Amino acid sequence: MNKNYLYILVVVGYIIFSGCGKKYYNVTLIKTLNNTTEKELYYKVETEVGTNAVYIRQTSIDSVVFYKEGHYTPVIMGHFEPKIRVDKEVIYNLTDTTIFEFITQSYVERSDAELMFFDIRSFDFFTNNTYVEITDAFLQLLPKDYTMLEKFPEYYGN
View 1 (spheres, one colour):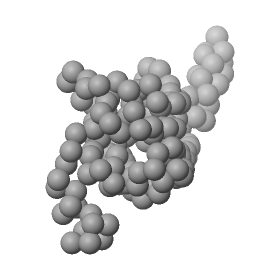
View 2 (cartoon, rainbow, N blue to C red):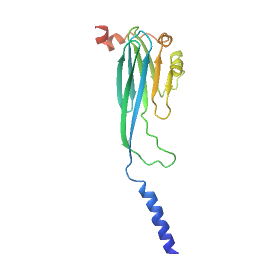
View 3 (cartoon, rainbow, N blue to C red):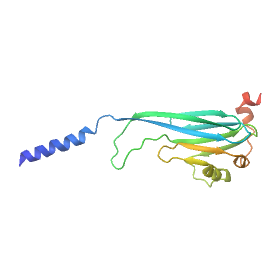
View 4 (cartoon, rainbow, N blue to C red):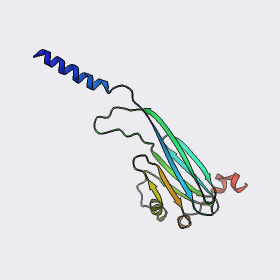
């Protein structure tokens, strides 16, 4: 009888401790912006791993890419899905000095621009990758931001 308990204990111990080795993961996050307008844009994304930005000329597509690697931490209940958390996305319309800020964890009432942003973006829930198609109708909803003259002196020639 004690031998049976010993065999069961060895098998259970092997199963438990065989999964405790360090398992590594790597995650890539791609945020793509398709500018279908005749305006020049600047797209900035802030994430938990850093900030990345790109100038997007008239009628062109570009992306910002983030990469994260690490090792899995034990999860008592459920399953750990490695993702890169996006904190904030900002679209600057350099041609018209307008701005769109989307703060991911914000729980305030959404503006018309934010509601349209949800409509014009394709979102992959499993990876957080997005594809956003910027249109003139979207840009017309954005408020003016004259501080852009100071933020982008190389564009405005200040």
